[in-house]
Image (cartoon, rainbow, N blue to C red; front, side, top):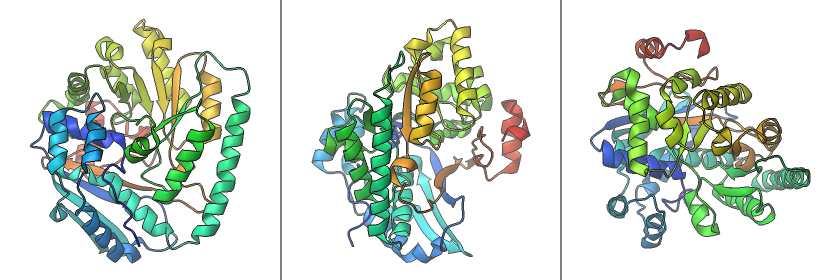
Length: 398
């Protein structure tokens, strides 16, 4: 069969935006990323080991084409020297290993961060697609199309109602856990063609390029986590990461991720300077309405008009959840809804909750203190306790 990944653009935009920043600011950083499946799969993922290794071989044989480089270079925030780097870039097979550990599939990428950080989305898409190839594709896609029609109908009916002050806008964030590459394309094409007033883009750079859509994305958890190990005082790591982002993009890509050490600790660092420079915030864990109220109260305290800012939601969203959040908040601030699995893998089969997360940088542990139980990630309990103490995050909050 054709490899799962056939283009190095077939990944999330924020991999490129973080990649460029790290290349310019901290190119010497060493990093380790580990694959984890958080839920029970229908069959052991170790059964996919040989196929995963073959797909990694194929991935490491790819390079960026001139057309792909031209597209990336046409994005105003992508610098010409980064495009030159990508022109000679290839994944190095020696930096990633897939192996079985008991009945668990392990995938570890370790090496210079600018050479291993882009593995993440490709690995997740590979494992997901290989996993679902063992199910009945025809019946799954038939059910997926039925559900897709229902989603579109729901949104079509909703947008006939009187609009709130700010428009209802959503985007596709579904690369990492998609049913398959062709299925994600079909879903994105359907939303783009039938809901152009609502559907504003996709995180998938390949689809954005091919379909004339806006590529969506700024930063992910790994970006802020890396700064925990870059030699700055740990308490200042978030501010250092945000400052580097501001200096790199000079006003572009202005949505900041808030939940690497929890929303309260983030807002303590998100002072008037950052609040004015960033266009808004992205939610990815915890109660979304509680989070939104904290964000709006913070803007009010800083005497910033919330109507000039945007809150983006991306944590396990469905169309119904997005509509509910819009009804609650659409008169108070600009909004955006990034929907992932519910768009790209809603075909009647139980999905995999898989991640590939940064676990260390420069030989030091890093962590995410999530606002959602079960999403905290760290291999080092001592560092996790220290991080909680430094940012005043109680243990029960994780």
